[in-house]
Image 1 (tube, helix red, strand yellow):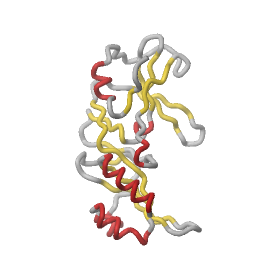
Image 2 (image 1 turned 45 degrees about the vertical axis):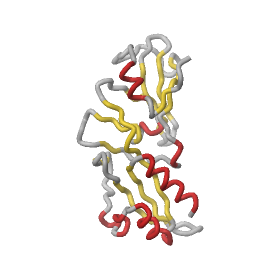
Image 3 (image 1 turned 45 degrees about the horizontal axis):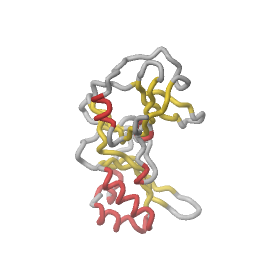
Length: 189
């Protein structure tokens, strides 16, 4: 049996995969087996934020829906597809066609962040995310977010009022190391 394919080795796997097919006549999922998982659970709750760059040949594994996708292979013809679970109410498994002409990048990725308001200045100082000081300038437009690949980006800033206290919530697109450090900060606050 093959070793499981992850976000860390997906590009090499796709580049060397000998059966690059565009379609499959067989039944998904009945005739398929799961051979990979793109999730990175090392930095907490993944985000539903979809992002891209201007380069149409890049697909970001850290962007929704790829950040929780599974990799499947047809047992009959070796066709590959990603899938994700559509959480909009039914939990339906949705296939995502693989384009072998594109590069599947692991960096950056995204995360939903939740910070207590009392900690926001310390958080900004620690991580250098000064845009959180003037949140009115943080983009909240719907749809796919256009990012710069080597720059940390923040979206969807909001203050959520709950019975247990207020929280500042936002989505961040950054390298996975920074996301892990932010997750550790969230845990200790």
